[in-house]
Each structure stands twice: as C-alpha cells, then as structure tokens.
Length: 154
Ligand SMILES: Cc1cc2nc3c(=O)[nH]c(=O)nc-3n(C[C@H](O)[C@H](O)[C@H](O)COP(=O)(O)O)c2cc1C
Image 1: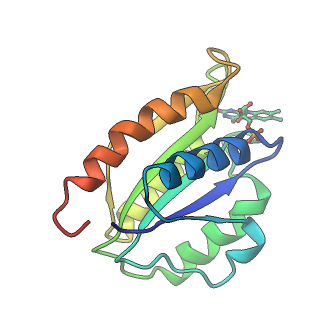
Image 2: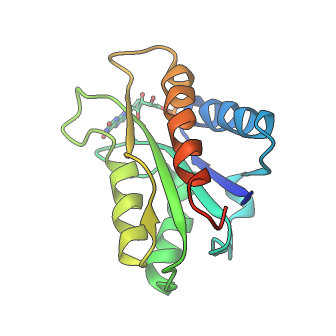
C-alpha cells in the first residue's frame, strides 16, 4: 500500500486536528501515514509513488494559512512536473465568506497544473454547518481510501 504524506495548514488548529484524526484512521487501516508539520516542508516535493493529502483551512480573504503558504509559493515557482502523483484535498472554511474554502481550491488548481490527479471530490467542510470537522473528514476518508486502494499500483 502506498504511503500517504499528510500536509496541513491551519490558523486556529482545526485543520491540524483533522489531519491528526485522518492520520490515525489511515494507520488503523494498516497504511503508513506521514504527518508533516509545516516547518518540515521546505524543499519537499511530493514523491509520485506515494499519495499526498492536503488539509487546509482558509484565512483572510480566501488566503492560504501562513504556515503553508510558503510551500505553496515555492511549488508554484519551481513548478515540478508530477504526472504520476495522486492527491486529495480536505478544505476547511466558512460559507459566509465568498471565498469559501479557497485555500483548498488553490491547492487543487496548483496540483492539477503540475500534472497530478485528484482522487475523489475536494471535500469542503463548512464551519457554519459543523463544530466537528473531523467527523466529515473521517466519512470522506473511508471513500477516499477505497478509491486509492482500487488502483492496482496501490
Ligand atoms: C480572520 C478569518 C478569516 C477567514 N477567511 C475565510 C475565507 O476567506 N474563506 C473561508 O472559507 N473561510 C474563512 N475563514 C473560516 C476558517 O477557514 C474556518 O473557521 C476554519 O475552520 C478554521 O480552521 P483552522 O482552525 O484550521 O484555521 C476565516 C476565519 C477567520 C477567523
């Protein structure tokens, strides 16, 4: 089974908690899951034979949290070509903002530009709808793990 590299961006800790919950669920299903703290992301180019899962909230007016933005900008600048990479996105936001979950959308657009393929829907978790984003994330993750496992290379 391919390893999952988990990357998170947070301001108040919700996305980090979701990422930790996701890691635990992945490990419980026997899959290796590497939870990367933002300060370890410098120079990290997601290996194409592993999976990438981005968990990010949105801040400001549709902005990526500071802790993750540097990595985003570096990848955008370096533009590595990653045609074999498969990834997923869990976006936390608040639908009272016009820029609902925009940080997740921007990551999705970036990795599509880099040639990678998103697996499953981009999950948007609305803080107006739930106080427990990890519950939605766990439900989504069960589907996501089925999809990734259906690839013969997994
Ligand atoms: C100052 C501020 C700005 C925000 N801007 C946005 C936004 O532009 N779009 C959005 O969808 N959510 C926005 N949110 C909502 C957060 O993304 C949401 O509450 C999320 O659950 C926070 O997760 P975190 O604790 O990981 O940062 C904003 C929240 C705050 C406090």
